[in-house]
Length: 227
Image 1 (spheres, rainbow, N blue to C red):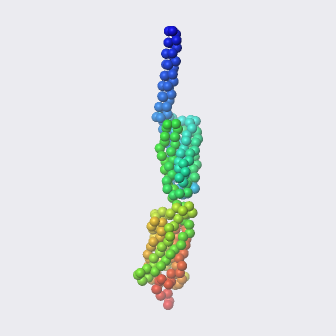
Image 2 (spheres, helix red, strand yellow):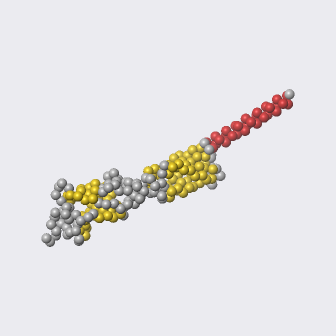
Image 3 (tube, rainbow, N blue to C red):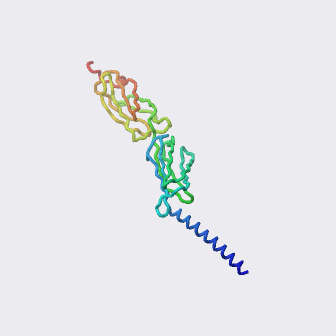
């Protein structure tokens, strides 16, 4: 009877020791560090984003062989990638989503969760747009507008973008101006050149995309040079 009691006590001690060891190992894992780096911080649709995960133990040493799970959302769809750390690091290449906005990357190993690394996606080159020009209520003033200007993925070009406007006639450039987008559109009023040789047009350049208006001579009553 005494031997049986000792055996039961020994088994209980062993179970408790294993539990304490497992808890200690988990505590060390939780005390470790999991860090995510993603860049570039701003990019355009479908460009490559480099995501690197760094993992250290509770003593700050690089971890080997742990399976890391990277999670993120792309164009509204949750996605994940997995890989094993080597010398504390594991890296992934992720294509930027097509919708302008933010992508957030986070890593997990068991109960250990990393920081959140965010990358901003902005519109790429705008599609060709059309200038609309009409006469203003004031003499020799014209109103220049466009529809919303977007890229090939439907993302509005940022309102921080400047549009270079050039008045050009048969002899060359008459005047240079700049207009800032408003809600993705050009809404701008300009005065006709004091002199010009017809035909007279406005050239607009936005991120290397160049468009021309129709002939504006009918809106600008200034006599032609030499007339």
